[in-house]
Length: 335
Length: 299
Image (tube, rainbow over all chains, first blue to last red; front, side, top):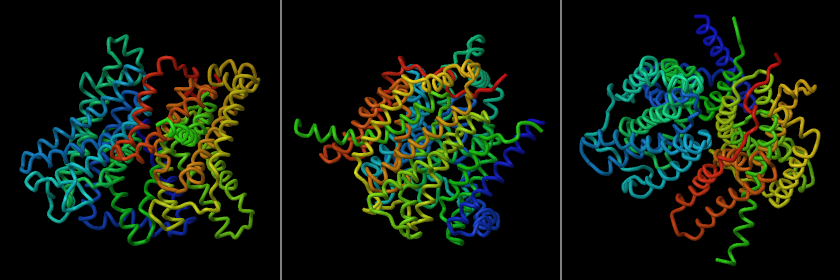
């Protein structure tokens, strides 16, 4: 109980300080901090359409956040969610290219997840076999994925009638809004359910236990007959599942385009938002869920802020960086 | 093919400079016992703050300086920015015993946001700003500077008393402390200098090498520098060789692009794939400082 209270206090304090420093940065660069915050934090809550849009933003952030959170449990800094999300989206686009009916949906899920898992297997195996640090390994894979997916979307999977995007999901294979006129699709409950499943998996399954022990102390894990390398592989694999799913859903369940932007705009940066969500949620799947809803509100709010007050959308990334810095400080050690 | 070689090697040398500067900084930092994976972000901030500071002083504050001074001022502004971030990271790592990896990740995220925001907020353009002619400089002298830093750092780390102190903080802080060394102070200073060098690498990219500021200017070079630290086995002299190899693949990628043999997306993958392969190939013999990444607390 005390630990929970302490971590809540630390999180609250970090949030507060990040917003204060953010306000100073805004003020220096000539924008009105109060008006900006008002439109960023309150506008999304003022209207159901906006709120649903915020929830739609939260879904992929939650899924990539789970990638990082599961990695943390195994003692890994898996920052490969970014590239694995691109690969997931690529799988979905490939499915849209291959079939033009409802079967594109299961095919998209299968290909997207398979691509993402294959992509994460490379840094995972390099770590196990050759001791390559996973931060360097996953970042390099992110960049390779970036160019690979951009190439695929501008060549074979290009959309002849809309040069800025890939081929679209066939209409029958789309997950359309649950509430007409909003962005709320099945992606949102699906992502939230995934978080609960991951929580159950980590807490109650044998593999969840093995991952936690290996993450806390590889030597102890070995003494218990657990092979930490296997735990690393499983943690990387599960992380790729959720990151790949995030990419798939951005294509099959994201109105109005149901495609992948040629500059990857609808998947770009999701992996890094996920890191923020995982840190803010203290690596706990349910915490990550709550954090992703908050970040979803920021994403939606930042759009309104840019239109209403003129403060650049990118400002939320500044806030996110400050937030993690303050979380890393762990300002309060005991209460 | 033969006549292209000198050009390719010169290009490799120029591409090696930012990787070398950032790796040298990180070698110093890690030798003292602190790991800073925020290199990429610090580079990006340096790339922004160099041109932004001189633009501000020249155009808005109306400062008059001889034209040859502006690039130096830009470099100085970048180094100061880097030092400031290094101060923060060093303080978190040494004195607060915070998680060094998480602090590094935070620096990267913050920088990505701050640079995108800064370009938009200061110049009012989205994500791309050309560096004016008067703020630019010849990359050659920065290259010379980087090689001098490599030599000096090698000498200090391996041939001087100061070097023994720095390395002791990274290998066995307990003994260093017992010998009367202020471990955390050494670590803080090494982190500050290391971050300043990474920021200089960034300023090199924007005012000397690529002549633009963008939100993706560093393009993974900070992480390639991290790979180079491992490749160089934490030795500044070997880092020169490593940076040249990594730089070669960077230059090769651009050269192949001009040949039109393959789509440019394929050639752009080359530096990253090469980095993975090189790191996977050498890692067995790499030996990091024993206490790197671990906070030192007096009992």
